[in-house]
Length: 292
Image 1 (cartoon, rainbow, N blue to C red):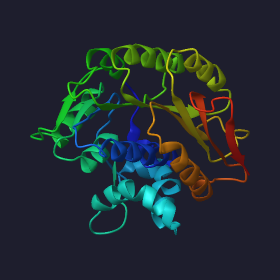
Image 2 (cartoon, rainbow, N blue to C red):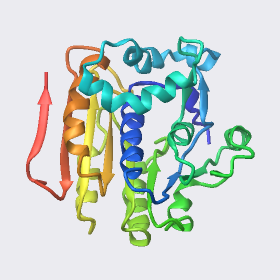
Image 3 (tube, rainbow, N blue to C red):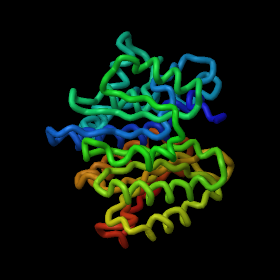
């Protein structure tokens, strides 16, 4: 209940998460049928990067600030286009004052038939999110613990959907909750595409987390990780990862384009790295890793 994403909005972890989320949405839209995005930890929707909170940390300067200013290669620019266009549309006068959280980003990318269910437990943040989407019949905002939504709100009536799970990792055992939440949700909605975010930091139980996911009876799980600095001299976030269940068949190749480019743009020291690999599914024994 204490976590406020405004301090971290637009940072390097948001860049990876939102770039991949935009690719998942665009893939869903290859078919005319409607789909629903369930965002379990939605936040406030739009973040003011000129606010005192965002300026206090300045994390966005080493995240979306760098990406917007970068000279992107054409293939990278094409993959980032949905995401970056949404950011630019929030800032029609130029510059970079406002940043879209995942629910706002999704809504900006939707077609008329697509729908959003956004869960937010923090009362003040829920109220702000509700006001943002008030009167928008494409969006349902609910004040609810996102972990409960993985049971109560699945499967969606559209029978097609993306489930974004992006917990704040404030408490012990969040990696276990993430694995348990996925297992519960997948039993109810095995055809959904799931995108699970997790932090990379010193002594984080990532190996055990991956092993717990591999033990689940889920055929296809793709993992993407981006590390921007060494964990030797920091106890904070040095990278982040995504687990994508039932990923689009195009996503692995897209990650091989995006991850090296983001590593180069977002690196904060001489030890950035990235990898995209199958936890379960296609070529799961072959881990593709590129480090500098």
